[in-house]
Image (cartoon, rainbow, N blue to C red; front, side, top):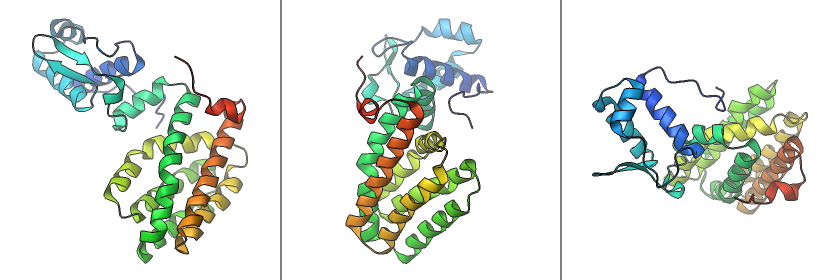
Length: 247
């Protein structure tokens, strides 16, 4: 699936959710602003008020808007959006420049993944380690960058599961879509397979050896190298890749 060019939803309900959601995420309708009035939207889409209100409830559930009596639906502040909701994430990927999205995601990964690897080294059962091993073996067997994507995702999900922390497992699942975009980006590097395997093997070996410090460090090294690979693909120096944008 090309998340940067999402297909238009087939149902009218889905189309309303998608189009209004993308207008919000893109900033065309800003936080604090109201969505167009119900009669206007009903006429524009040719739907009844119940259909429109159901679509609005979906946007409310995603944290994008709040419905206020006598006011209507108002866009919430960006920090209140459910950013890991699959739709919100797709709309964000579609809107943000590729480098900006990657930097944001990499910061999250660098906070979470080394700690998760260390915890997995302590908490993993033999079955968990076997699952990580299978994912890694599938990575070894991948013939193309496209073939590498799913086992790479499975490898990281298996580590999150091996922490035996329900919240981390949930975060790992919710990040899968974003992580797939990150992997697709770094896979453009001409030596992606040769470079990726030793980094992941080091993480797996440390977890299998129950060495939390080594697992954390191996994860840090893997992410540092992934950032460097992406920087070489996107252009610019590592410092430029890490420098926050103004505005």
